[in-house]
Length: 142
Image (cartoon, rainbow, N blue to C red):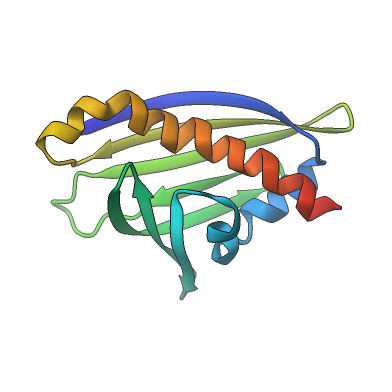
């Protein structure tokens, strides 16, 4: 099991409302998030197929939106499912744009040797995801 607990921050050249609009449209995640290959919303649940370092997985998630951020949380398949994933975005005004903080926590069951890639997995799940949002939000606002 690879465990991830990483917080990253970035200034975004778009207002908080634009950042939240991007985060609040999960069906469009594949348009801007490199790790999301497919996304669909069914019955209020976000169904994602993601790929990290060549490893593909599907997960059902709950998306919670608030005026100051968004939380995407993987839903367990059953009581024995110990894998976890949470991406918590905090968005606040900063100058003409926004300051965004992303805190990712995860427990991911990966094949043997892949566990040695923890640092790279951590960067893909947090750093790359936030960089993708920072690039997408200004396009959404303008």
